[in-house]
Length: 240
Length: 336
Image (cartoon, rainbow over all chains, first blue to last red; front, top):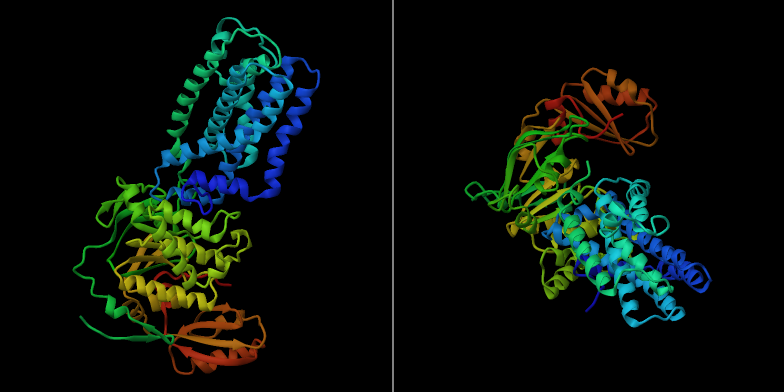
């Protein structure tokens, strides 16, 4: 399989990802620079887990939202949309490739975390999968936001408005032991499973099982991905 | 079929050879298209036109006249408020993806993925239009060579000049062998050699049966390249026909082109009797005026009075721009 020259949208994004070497080095290093010191420190487990969760949420949301907004403003995405490619397929490719590339950036840091905090392999898998689910969710949010934004500054504003309540409900910092409606809502936010899996990696015990982490975020992400793909005709329409 | 050749501006034109399109169903047919922007109230209104296979159709009009809006509608980028269009028999509103597959498109401000090479950009678009790998590579190699871009094909697009970017956009529009080509200001920014290459390619494609709609304000280009042309003014088609027919509507108008050694303040020239307007183009002053005895002498005297040092002077027959001015009272290009 060759990526350059690319014959599909996702391969084009992979080719672009690897084409800028300096940017690539920075992209690969910044999660390590943030996460590894946290993992190596004696920081309480709930905060260490929160830092990694927030990095994943921010990387996914801002990455997709900003790059899409720039491409839309530039006109290049509109030009691609005027090829016979299905707009739904295009948006799905944008979502999938961005989430996978985000995971590629986070994976070295996660592997170092697992080395520093050895846990059963099922929890390593669960944590990795749920981080990916968080990235997919964050990218869904980023793509959704790009439907309404006209500049990267807009992305920041809209993302903040959407992410703050979700981060609160997920229990990264507050709402650690929710009850009632908040507890129900927490079960619908994939970030919360990331938080639970990472807390377990850092030595805390939560009530969430690996099976729940494998199943629930996957279902939620599938629904979110489907929903965000439905925005394709609007997202890829001419901005006037 | 009438076989003639038409020499204009020193360029060979096989227009008449392509003009037998009367009985062929149109490759592109716009029917009463209206699209007005809510913010400005501008756009197009009730525009109908058709382009037959093998025909080159020029769309002219000043900035804001609706050319790009019409091309946006026809390229399926935006839906019309009312009306419709067909491309190769397919409905442009309900069969968008099939319509897109049969069209080549060059937008007015082409953009590319700057961190990819020119070849990678063009290959991505060719494959997006459904070309097979080998065919795409073959077609692109030929086009890069034709447009003199082969040497730079593996350079990143961010190193390209504006003209090279335009040539790359032309390659992307043509590579997949579309049946209809929509080109918005295709030659703007191209150097002379590239313009000749582009025009040669357009003629070749038309000879192969491709229907071409090009929006341009390059009067020479439209006159030499297009079988028919339409003027858009404030969103409406105000005239349509062959360039010869359109120009024949202008009688009693001449254009005097004075090449000056130095720029001058030429405002007083408009006070010369019979002068309709004065447009500067580089070192040239183009004076549109009535045809009457002594007007050339009066204009020359006026230029000299303004301090102009004339190094060359020619009196030319009217062109499409004069037709537009006479029809609308406005200029195609911005004037001072």
